[in-house]
Length: 218
Image (cartoon, rainbow, N blue to C red; front, side, top):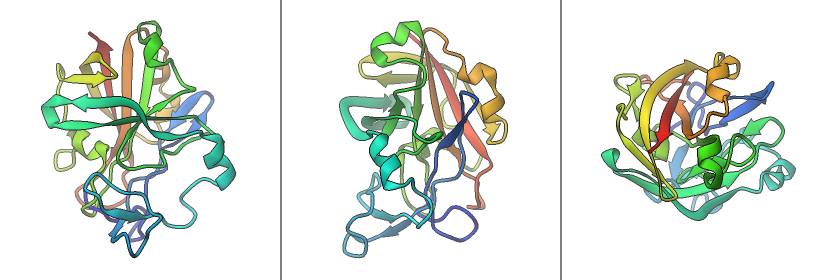
């Protein structure tokens, strides 16, 4: 991915999803313009420390952002040793039927879907994160293989979240239109982890699929 734009050639970032009938529809793509801090002092910062500009109309309203109660760092880490990913675990709530992580350098636990890490053995922990193109780097970039159109993680890879170790059992590219109708994806299954990000494409155009990584508590 590069720090670039979503929707054609315009620069945008990822709107992660809408909740339809209790299921999340992950839409959009992380496309952001990399700039200097001087150009956009209020913009979010990607994993390389670059400022990224968010286009008007691609974020939630101030009221919705406040109601999301999002935090970029809960004091817990999200690690995938096989790809060298080690980032903060943030948290947010679904608001107005959308999941929109406000930052591009964290993985976010969705509080009001599934269960918390404290109850991980009783249900599914749902996580969402950005991927970007145009040179920008977000956690989702580590999880996908853009050239192959696959996940960068193989079955058996380890994911560590807040001291809990999960083992990847499957990865699947799902069209954004199909995501809200996938009952198996949204089932609250004991001991399961689901990580969702956009699957970018080599052409750098708007992605039409999400990468869903499923893992089981070890």
